[in-house]
Structure formats: C-alpha cells, structure tokens
Image (cartoon, rainbow over all chains, first blue to last red; front, side, top):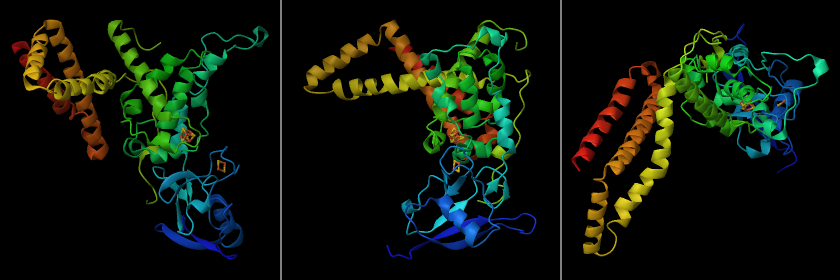
Length: 250
Length: 135
Ligand code: SF4
Ligand code: FES
C-alpha cells in the first residue's frame, strides 16, 4: 500500500427540497487501515462536501445511530473497517425499509411507534413505594432477559428483514424482542397487556423466520430467537384462552 | 434502493389498546412447531430405518425384517403414532410453504392461501389415515 493510497466512497445523495431523484456521488478518501466507513464519511463532510448528511454519535457501537447500508449490507458504519473493502469502492446507502429524510438519514418515526406499541417498560398492578426498597431479582432471573435488553435501536435488523419491507403491521425484530424482554422480566406484570398487541394479526405472526435480524445484529440480541420464544408463549396463550375464554383482555 | 424505500418501518404501528384480536395464526404456528419436532426427529429416523436399515444385508433376512415391521404397523398404537408424525409433519411443511409464498410476493393472499395449504395437509393426512387403516 502506497503512502497516498485512496479509496472510493460512493454516497447516496438525496436532498428532497432540491433533488427530484436520488443519485450517487463518488469521493476519493485517503485510505487508512484503521479507519472505519464512518471516519471516511466524516472526512468527506469535513474536507470536501459539508452538505453530506448522516447520523452518528459515539463512534464505538453504543449509540446505534450510524447504521447504513454498506455495499448492500446493514452495518454500523463505526464498526465497518475500510480494510475489509479496500481496494474496491465502498457504496453507502441509507438503511432500506425506511423512508429517506435526507442523504444517509432515514425517518425513525414508524420504528419509534412500533417500539412504543409493545409497552417497553415495567408494568405493575401494585407499585411499592420506595420505602419498601427495590424489586429484587436473582442472577438467574436477570439472565432470562438480559440478552434481549442489549438492543441499541440501531435498526439494522429492520433493514435486514424482508417482512418489515412487505408488511406494515409487522412490529419488527427489535420491538418484538423488546416486548419479550419485558415479558420475561420477573418484576413485570404486564405480559397480558403486551400480548394483546403482539398477538394481533400480523404484528408478530408476520415473521416467517428468515433469521437475518439475528445475523446482522451488532449486539447479539438474537431477535429471531426472542420472536420464536414469544411465539411459543403466544401459542400457549391461544390455547389457554380457547380452553377458558375470559372476557375482554384484562 | 430508492428514496422512500419500502413501506414497512416507515408506516405507523397500531398503538397499544385492548381491542386487538388474538390471531388464529397461533393455532397454525402451534401445529407448525409440533410438526417441526416430528419432521426433525422422527422423519429422518423413519427414513434411516425403512430406507436403509430394513433392506440392508441378505435379501431373505431383509424380507423377514420388513414383514415384521409391517406387522408392527398393523398394531393400532403404532398406527396412531405414525398418523401423528405424518399429520404434524404435513402441517409443518404446508405452513412453511405458505409463508414461503408470502415471502416471494403473495403476502396479499395470506388468508386465501390457508385453504390450499392447510386443506392440502388435511387431505393428505386423511389419505394417510385411510392407508394406515387398511394395513
Ligand atoms: S435487535 Fe440488534 S439489530 Fe435490531 S435494533 Fe437492536 S441492536 Fe440493532
Ligand atoms: S456511532 Fe454510535 S453506534 Fe456507531
């Protein structure tokens, strides 16, 4: 590799207020094998073209804001090294299955609604006041949901999932894993409320177990596994209600 | 990919609320799941036993073995077990096919596909029951 090696980045560009159509723009970026794709995009924004719009924050795989399609695959750009692509060009697109807001930035609104729909917080019938101390949990109880709580909302799994692209009602991998995470929390009493949402028509059953969500997840949340577990809970619930039907969900 | 992408995650989700009806998909999934266990554990065992082990070795001995096996299949608890394995595996298979068709663009017909898929599984199960009955 020569001193002045460069790598080509092809960025998806779209400014809805001026562009009638999206296009790709190529940039030559100094090649450094310690650089990640995000470093290259930041270099372009700082040195060549300040109009390039993208999201990022932590640069260390924690905040979940830098997700983009890198050569067609959903990736955290702060964890995608240039050396894995060099000397071929790197094409960067906004995450698929989301409406594009501007350049590499997508709208998260639908995603946020889906997260909210599963009531991702602890629900209790009785709320102890603080004088009674915390709700204790054993390490084994923590282990039942810990993995599913590692999600950073990067939305890579939504970009990887074909069902998300086809089925509006489908809540999607991260939201379902999050709902399941609270259902498995020993401190929670809200499972039946969440199941009302998760078990309705295509909200969860839309999943055809493609499994790509788990493949792309940078945090090893295994949303596909969470959905399978949640389906088993849902099937039990279905038969329970069939055997002893109760009034409108309590 | 074009701006605007797919409709999926951009669209709204239904907000929580007690009115959502639990879906009958749970029932089909339960059959699919049980059938998956059958198809993964018992079907390969049957293939190995009836396809390889029974006919192995000396022809006369193999014929005797096969006859003994056929006689066992005439015993009604074995018939019931066989029918269970066959029926659940069929529902597993047809559920998978239905979802495969949905993935390749027939999602709109998800409801309509139930009839040929699960109806097919039921019809083939009926045929299996009829054959087993006759043994
Ligand atoms: S489940 Fe994984 S891929 Fe999906 S949003 Fe969470 S961290 Fe990202
Ligand atoms: S910048 Fe925070 S995860 Fe990549």
